[in-house]
Length: 443
Image (cartoon, rainbow, N blue to C red):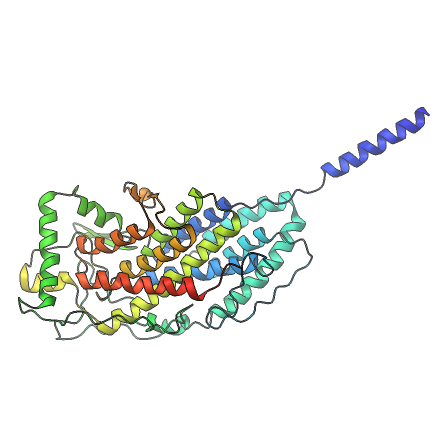
């Protein structure tokens, strides 16, 4: 009998020990996804991607994550056959217990790596995660890698047909013209217009870049009683009044908060250097993160939110850039220096592309509609996106209120006329509304 109890006790110990040695499940949280998005943003700031190109990087990376997560979801639809030319994704599972959250994050990083210049930086980040996950459960990691990369490769194949590569070989913007209404490069670096062929990029949801072609801006005129000249004078007058109030005036603070210029040239004596910042799209991606954290969203909703806002931002840039190089309108700085006050300078550095419509306005309008659809009306949040650049937190009572301020900031910055702001905001709202109504995310 003693031998029986000894054998039974030994069996229990062995079984208990066996259970304890099983590899634990790799837990992936919303914070892991936020960290990956933040890492991609940091790399894009370092690589100095233009706002339109940055929007493309965010969108394809998030789509890869979303599709990996939601091929068999009971809550979310796949985006296959919903986005332009995205055919059905064919997933390949090595077993029925693939960690979809882990695979989703792997797919995100896999696509992101192909899109940035600093591939080593994102590879190092990814490999550090792989090393940690491998110590927890190597089999689970291997299965997730196989599944995630199977889908990310299909997204990459679709991505490679969006005309981006073709636009890299198209001619630069022709800046030579005697027409005073035509955009010209501006101080201090006089950079040639960026991404003049962006309207040729395949949209994600829009039926074409010109789907929401805005009404024409006021007819160019330097006659003092003309609507256009009055808009020029508004920019001049508002900025003169702001300068009298000083750098701490509410208008100056708003302008600087929403600057989001990824490459500001600074002259110091004989030296010129760049101050790197996030793009307008990255600012709204940051607001998305704030809303997700504030509402404690789960992993699935977090990926959904990032994907949906990325789609809106990307199509907003395509829509906006289509109009910019169609209207080719001169910036306030050029006209004011030539015809009104040669010593005048805007609060913000004028970005290197035509004026109409305002990119901040279009992107903010689209983003605010999409975030409102996800998190609701009257969503109070404190925007700390710019804290890392030495700017204070700004509170907002809704996403739409933030969008209206972002749009108006371009007047305060001295880089846009009133029409580009107001009509651009409406243009963006139309893009955001289209994403909200046309793309079915939720089942």
